[in-house]
Length: 211
Length: 211
Image (cartoon, rainbow over all chains, first blue to last red; front, top):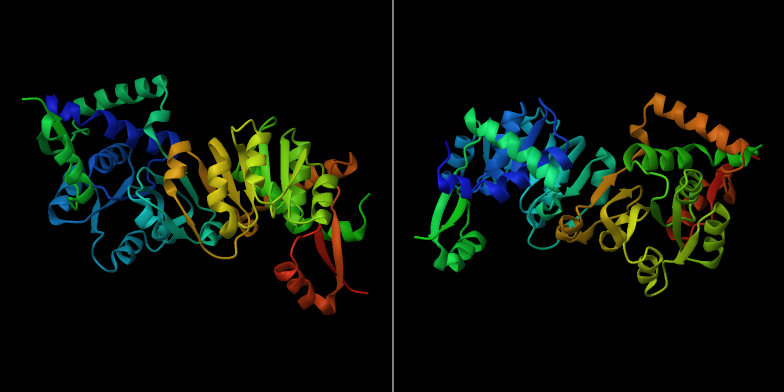
């Protein structure tokens, strides 16, 4: 059973992660996925869905508490994306082949690096970005890699039905467990927004509630 | 029948265009493709292959002679990519929906613009790039568009066999006609290289020959 708070954390995060993994990136069991920014709502949801799909899951976070969230969500390995040289560690974790799939939460910071650590024919799904970034398209040519934009509001009703049916099953068997981070009263919604933009590392899904 | 010079213009250009269109971009009849830089070897080959596949073909060139090549190759409409506002004209030619597919020959210059003129769920194939470029990944999210790197040396033997079988058929029915541009003696290969990099607008495929 999920709590109401967990239920509130389900909608946008899990549907976005589901759309990205299964409808845009076409992930397969045994593939390695690197979830770049895995401690937030979409990231942690993607860890759980990828894990339940039989993938090898690498995730990153920017703080100790964030890393605990990624661990709790079920990642096989967790990296600190604020640490120098963490990309080399991700490469080492894939025997320097690179990740088959990358889910990117902050493309304006990480996209060029993603192009360097993705495997040949790898796919990079962009679910978040807050500005522009310089990339070298030749990196994409050399590996025949792809970058794919993902936006939940493009979802169809049949896809929502497919996803929520799956979510119910995964929640029952325990592999889907929304991780609720800080909770704000609805009147403090602006503080929640400030927390996401300026608050450093995400720690699960923020939830607004009416007391 | 093709001449030996036309045969020399076949290999890399047509195989690259074929791989891009059919194996990476999965083009479909009736889709609109914009070939950004269509007067060179790969571009003109892509015009012919896309046209033979039943697509609506828009192409660009940077000179009057280049535009003639794109016309001769069979594009439905030709745009001058050195003219201010040509992207608006491409949009107008798609009823402002954008192109379903873009084949990009100079990504370091055009990629950000491609993201603006591609249709919802559109695919941009990168077959050429000579440096880095700043892009806004949110443009990709808003349309759920994709950028896909293409590199001929990743081709498999079975794909070559598939492509060359098709090329023979298309050459026989006249829809495949390699357009030979300037011809250089093999000893002047360095001049040919200079021509491509510095020579402005391409005009068909450069061919080297031994006299």
